[in-house]
Structure formats: structure tokens, C-alpha cells
Amino acid sequence: MFISIEGGDGAGKTTQARLLADNLKSLGSDVVLVHEPGGTELGEMLRSWLKETGKEISPQAELLAFGAARAELVENIIKPALAKGTIVVADRYSDSTTAYQGYGHELPLDVIERVNSIATQGIYPDLTFILDLDSAQAYNRGIARDNESNERRFEDMHESFHSRVFRGFREIAANEPIRCTIIDSSKPIDLIEKEVLDYLAYAGYI
Image (cartoon, rainbow, N blue to C red; front, side, top):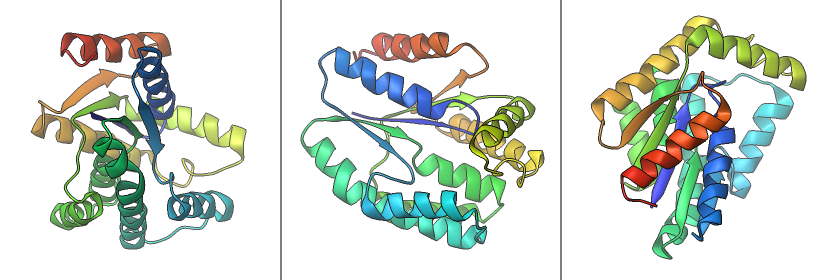
């Protein structure tokens, strides 16, 4: 099984992905937790470069760089794990590219789809939980996080960008209602955690 946790910055994806992986492990499942960009030498190098330099790159370059990192992650981590019957939990995947580069940066969606198809080799999640949040609340969370880490990722992106990203995720969910489940991430962390597990139990996955 392949599960992804998606949503805009500030929605709490990383926390919920970690909690889900831990909960599945506690139930006796073999689980691999991956995050994007990361998980491979190329992905970690890209993540480190973006964080340490703070340099901006064009939306087109960003699209291709993240696509390359994802291709390495799929080939070296995700495919082998799924082939062994291991559950993969992803903190971000191809939906993030659609939402950020497609809706946020307004690159053509057909171009995004082609890059995603190449990078994923056609491997997509069985289930995706999209953490939804009012863009203004997400923006405030992001500013607070940036202040703690001395970064300026949110401050450098206008709230309208984040609003388009969250709208993109909602449209993705509307287009693929069987795969995608929207969860209100304004709720406390433990309630979101429970909602994810309740859904998996109700659907017969755990």
C-alpha cells in the first residue's frame, strides 16, 4: 500500500506522515516513510541546497529539479519497498508538484502531468490524505515557523500564492474523490491523527 500526505505549507503534513508511519508500525506493518525532496542522495542534496542557500530558482527549473529528485526516490526507494509488500508513507508526492508548480506558479497543467508521469513511472498512491487549511491561517503558521528557523520561505511568497496552492489541492481531491480524502487541519494534531486511522480502519486497510 502506498499512502501520501499532502497539503500546503503549514498544514502539518510532516507531523501526520510521521504519526501515521509510527501507528502502522505499532500495528505490526513494515513501513517506509519518505519525504520530498529527500530520501536519496540527489533529493537530500536538493533539499540542503534550497534550505542553506535560500536562492530562488525559476518555476520551470523547480519543476524539473523536483521531478528529478522524485524519479530517484521512486526508482531507489518506493518501487523496491512496494515490491516487497512494504507500506510506503510519503510526506508529499506528485500532487504537490501539481498544486505548487501548476496552481501556485501557474505553469501549464499538461506540462506538470507529463513531468509527473515520467518521474513517478506511473506509480501513484492508493490513498492520499489532503490536509486542508485556510490560506491565511497557513500563512501565519508558516511565518511563525520561518521566524523560528531564520528562513523566509513564507515571507517571500505572497499569501495569494499559498491560496492558489490550497485551491489546487482541493481541485485535485474533487477530481479524484476515490483516492483523495480532505481533512480539516485546523483541528488538533491528535484528532487529525485519529481521523486518518479511523478512515483506514473503516476502509479495511488496517
